[in-house]
Each structure stands twice: as structure tokens, then as C-alpha cells.
Length: 363
Ligand code: MSS
Image (tube, rainbow, N blue to C red):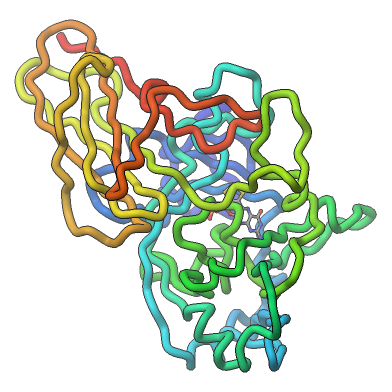
């Protein structure tokens, strides 16, 4: 990984210098770039593409973009223009890659070595999936899954199932899902899945299918590799298989974003962000002595709901020396970040507070 001096063309509109470039298709927001504002501006949002993002030429007229809805009583394609005529909704939620925090595991993991920056807090506008389904006569019969398919062309000569971005989530996810066309008040940039993206509040990034071309209600899960063996949680050394837990709902997590390395003597404001996954947060505590003692931090700014993250702050008077600063969030039902997080083969879902701590030197 290297710090991006020049960003690839499709994301050249993003803040230069704010990203760690793991590859042209994986850009991590630098830890200190996340401030106290509740939403992450589009030009600071991380990027993760399994396949190259669609181009404007490939998309054509965005209003004519079609999503094929299947597994409902009256299946049919629906255009973005028509989606706009159904009742819109806005939801703020965390967009976080399943592998965020992978770089903190001690075992060797393949994939981008994300630290904290494969996460953002975004306001999405679109139409609830429930509304679309109702307009098409409801789900047809007994279905257990909702499947979203990405619109990227499949490179020639490859078995589509090995590359297609197609994710199935439990049917109940339709209660919170959105077919979105706006991201923080702008048309969704292609790098983030425009013209229409499936947004699944509370679910890991991979389930939020970009350039959505098909939404289907099914009895079984997709047979695509990304569903069958990818994004499966298993012990280190084991291969992925459909009987292992899939990366669906996010867990409780927090991390400090300031200060990261140095601070002056006297008063320092320590801040960071905390998310409850699918639940409201009860509290965030901060430690300046590596977890020996904790003090409750204060949430800053509006509460944007249970799927959003909340910035927090704690004022501290730090004596000269090195301080290990950690944060630990707890949800309304009492789920708290563990000190250590059990390793898993692909390095998914790390929320251990100790590994996310920073050593800050005060002079
Ligand atoms: N979608 C599509 N279509 N394609 C691709 O590649 N990826 C995933 C999601 N979706 C994809 C999709 C992932 S994997 C993630 S994280 C996300 O997306 C990201 O987002 P952005 O916007 O940030 O880039 Mo991991 O779990």
C-alpha cells in the first residue's frame, strides 16, 4: 500500500492525499481524515471494487437505467425515472467493508490490509424496497432471500459465477433496504454504484450492491462465488463454504481519529467515531492508559439513527510521555467491543478495542 499521490481517473474527483491506495480499486480513507462532522463527504469516502466501476458510456442515460425485479407477483424492469415517482426516503448509515480492520490481525490474510478507513457514514436517498415490492404485488410465495446483482459486464472468457457481484441476504433485510440514487445529496457517483445502488443499513459493504441491475426474491442463495465461498467467516486455514456464517450484519465498533501520534501538553480533545451496527449506542468510553481505566466520552452532533455512526469526544489533560489511547463502544442492549477479536481466515469484522488503540506522544 502507498499513499496516493495521483488517484485513478474514475476517482480523480476525490480528495488527493486523503487516501491510502491499496490498489487502483481499493482506496482507504486515512484515519485522521475523519473529523467530527456526522456525515463523511463523498470525496473522502473509501472505494472498494471487486470489478472495475462502470463508466458513463456503459451506463448511458442514468434515468433509463433499469433494475429487473424478480420473484414478485408482477415481475418487471423498473427505470430510475419511475423509481423517482414512488415515495422517497432518506437513511443515514455506515458503509463499511467486511475486511475493515484486517490489517490489525496478527495472522497473514489475503486482501487489502485495511486499518480503520474502509468505513464511512453516508446519507442515502431512494425508495424503500418495500414500496417497490408492494407496487409489484408483493413477494411471490415463500421466499427466504433477497438477491442483488451488480451491473458490471463480465470479462470475456471467465465463468460469470466466479466474478459476478451478486449477494443474497435474508428476506427480512427488505424491511430496511433502499434502492438509492442520491449519496449525501448528490447523484451517486459511479465509483460508489450509481445510477442505482442497493443500500442495506446495518449490513457490511459487500451486500450494498452497486450499479444494481437485478433485485430478486428467492428460495435459495446466489450460486456466485462471492456468496458461496467469499465473505464467509471460518477458522484460519479453512476454505470458504456455504454453511459458514456470511458477512451480513455489522458489529459494534469504535476508533479514535484524533490525536493519532502526537499531542501538546495541557488540554487535548480526543475524538473518534462509534457505531452500534444495527443498534443504538448506549455509550463510548475512552482510555488514555491502554485500557486500565475508562472515562465516558460525549457524543457530538445529531443522532442520525441506529444505523449511523456517532462522533464522540473526550477532553483530557495528558502529561508528557506516551499514552495508549483506546475507545470502547457499548450498544443499548449491552453488546460491547471485546478487548481482542478472535482471528478468522479472511480477517473479517475486527472490532477488538486493543488493536485499534493508538500510541500518542506528549511533549
Ligand atoms: N457492488 C458492485 N456492483 N461491485 C462491487 O465490486 N463491492 C462491494 C460493494 N458493492 C462491489 C459492490 C464491496 S466488497 C464493498 S466493501 C462496497 O461495495 C464498497 O462500497 P464503496 O462505495 O465504498 O466503494 Mo467489502 O465488504
